[in-house]
Image (cartoon, rainbow, N blue to C red; front, side):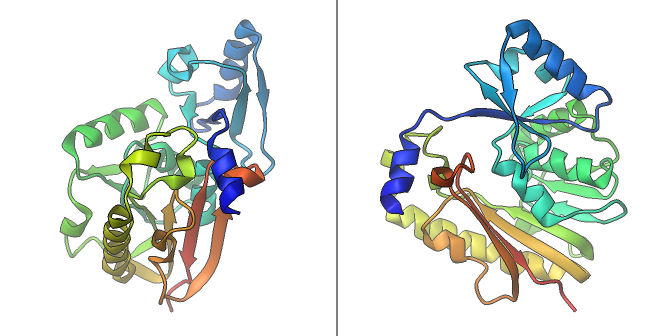
Amino acid sequence: VARALMDAGNETPEVAFRISTLREGAEDRIYADFDRLDVTLGMDEHAPDARVVEGAVDLVSLESFQTGDLVPMSRSAQRIAPFLAPEPGMRVLDACAAPGGKSGHIAALLGGGEGLTCVERDESRARQLVETLHRQGVDGHRVMPIDIFSLPAEEQGFDRILVDAPCSGFGTIGSRPDLRWRRTPEDVARLAAMQRGMVDFLVPRLAPGGALVFAVCTLGTAESDSADGYPIDEVLTLRPDEGAGEGFVATRLAATS
C-alpha cells in the first residue's frame, strides 16, 4: 500500500473542478468554454458535479471561473460535503472554511447559503472566502473571521459540523511535491493534537441528532485517528492509487442522541 501511494504521488496530478449548481446555466456555459478550447471533460460516478479536464488547462484563466460557474476542486474533495449530508433547513458549521470549495458545495446541497456559518481565522483568507462564495452564487450565509476556539458559547445547536482540519497533506503530494521535504514526524504529532482539540471542542456544539465529519487530506498517519473514542458512524477513505484523485480520510461521528 505504501509503495502504491508513493507511486501515485509521482504521477502528474489531474485537473478537476466542481460545477457551481447555484448558478443557473453554469454547466452549459462551462461546456461552451471547453468546446472553444477543444478539450474533453471526464466525469466521476461518485461525484456527479465533478469534471476532469482531459488535458492541460489553466482553470483560473477561463471566463467560467471568473463568473463562478466552475470551482477548481479535486474529485475526492467533492466527496466530503455529500458525506456530511446537509439538507435544506439545517444549520451547518464549516469550522475551517477557506478557501471555500467545500463551503460552496455545502451551500449548494443546502439549496443556498441560508443556515451556513463559515469560520476562518485568517482575516485575509476570510475576505477571499467572502469573495469566493459570492462568485459561486452563495447567499444568506455567515463568515466569522475568528479562531474556531473563540467561537462564542451561543453558537451551538448545529445539525451538521464539518472539520476540514489543517493537516500534513500527504494525500496531495502529487500536486504539492514540496511536502516530501517540509513535513516532519513532529508536524504530524502537533497537527493530530490540534485536530483532536477541534473535535473535542465542537462535538458539544451539535444539536440532538446532529453529526460531525472530521476530514483530512492525508493517509497513513496519526491524524486519521483524531476522532477516535467517539461513536463513529462511517469512515470514508479515498486513495489516489485507487483512482480517487487525491487522498482523504473522512470520519462521520454517529448522530448524538
